[in-house]
Length: 100
Image (cartoon, rainbow, N blue to C red):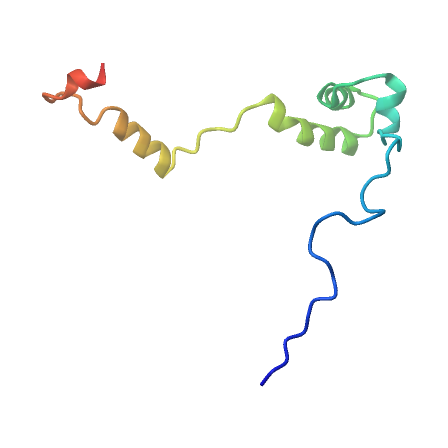
């Protein structure tokens, strides 16, 4: 018969000394802290629009800011087709009054 080994590592719960120490300072991006800028999106847009910045850095800032500035294009997949079909499923029938 096989012997079942007990796990020597504890599973969850309180462990003394674990976690972030109380009162430890918050780490911030140096340029962000120097400018006093609190909004990361505004910082990314400022880097992107700075003509003196390195072009690769401007590209990375634009890529990082893109999802927050522009919404994704609707793919129009199966889910969208099903929702469109369900929205007008009873149109033109005797049950149409239920849609109003």
